[in-house]
Image (cartoon, rainbow, N blue to C red; front, side, top):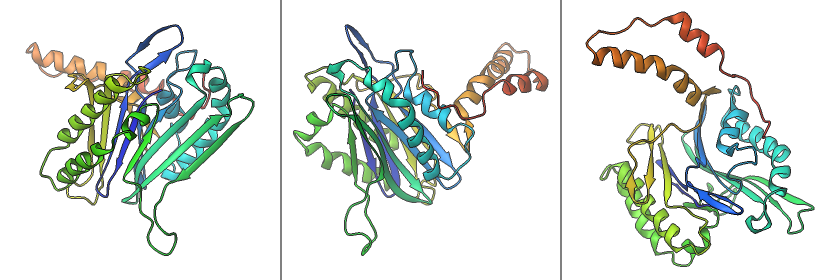
Length: 307
């Protein structure tokens, strides 16, 4: 129950997700992080999902995906293959236990650049209405004749309960793609596109009758290395159409390393340095043994257990 929207461009990939996690018999929470980023030796990708927002044990799939890919310094498509296999093993029991009104399906959209070529993948698992069997798919999405012409990537990707509202009036597509093209030509900053995506999420939140899409959202973007912006990217958290001051780190795997965990582990040392400088005491000497001991405690192997 959510909204996932991707724009899969020749120079920049974008992803919007809302943050609502719905529960049976109690109010929803709007603090989910329904995406993660992945960097490999041959590409970069953003993974966002609709379906299971959190397990009964409180695990968000974004953190689970990060744990599955941790320690796997593999090419992009092999990473996605490992993730899809783990999902097929771990998710059925959690989806089957969801309340009937929530359905029992989970979809991951993956816009990516593979060797600087734009790609769109998806991983989907859906139970039959009686929840006695399920279908599974991991695929790459293309358009046009194959292989007679180079396959084209779909420009827009959608998942979640917000699709119905967006497809009822598609005029938003033209306006959005116009702003994206302007950004790729460096006529507007990426934050302008991010603001517009947050506006779309806010419209869906207000217009979705079942209250399944929340007003808070996250927008992530990554530039192609060979583009005029020479790679890189960013992300922004929103509350409605307002940028949030604290855009916290998202789960990120870079060449098999858990970047978010590294940042969290080293942040106390950085904050101590900054505090000392602000107090006029000069820079503190970093205790290398202490920081190495902290880093040594971080998990570094894959873990697909979903609890």
